[in-house]
Length: 343
Image (cartoon, rainbow, N blue to C red; front, side, top):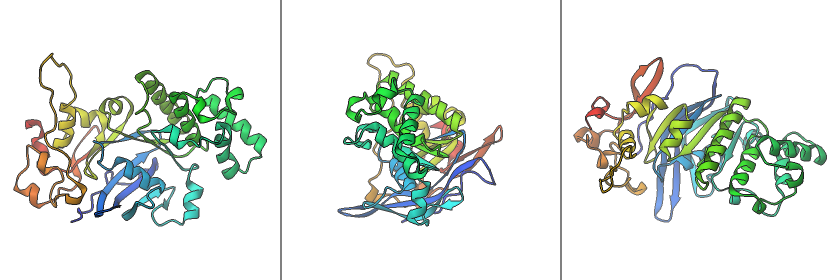
């Protein structure tokens, strides 16, 4: 049973909105049948801000990102919804239009740079490709732009390394190269799908600092896809919490983390050890996320929720306004959001 359409997370017109996702629904084909991996997800990404999609593994974050950039085939497809970028609905747009917007308006950074970069071409060739395809530059001019791009993202001695291959760079340098390729044409929206997962803590900080600097320089909207609460707290302006393919809470990071209005959000925050003693039990969310083949018709979180009641079993809560602080919108999909502090 499909969920009711969620309300748009932000009302009204906002000329800073770079990406507007409304009721995005993705069906995933499996050997045992089709399942709903993303269920009527809505959010907006504004230029100059970072929006985090946060949740456990398997909650639909990466599938949402793949839908945005058109990488679902052949395992999945968009069943419903709209993805508006530069006044174009990417769901109904022709493939030629999507190709034109790829890189120039919307780009993505994947978490595994070694598989995202082509091992048989030099990094200079790969960095020059967007300039040759979209800007119609000569090989010499595109190569010059590739060198400048490497310098811009902090690759040392780019003139001597432009003819190197991906395997000749460290993990952190490869991630910088991926980011360089993504921002080459100054896109309005940058999707960063777990961009620091395989990196050590020091390099993670460097990569996120680079993304922040580029966001400011290019006035981009950054959509950060992660399961790391600390990363969201440090880097994001707003957050959308996802669970079982649904957005269950949205709002400014400081407000959502400071006063969660959905029991799943509170469970995630409570599971972070603040001051643990040796031998003491660590808090966790009991149970496991529902199997995509058996998503309940009511609230998707009901099996793990300490507030679950008969209404939660019978009725899917809609993402709706739970009040505003300092003029900013907060939304949650919970019938009993006023009682979260009692959990």
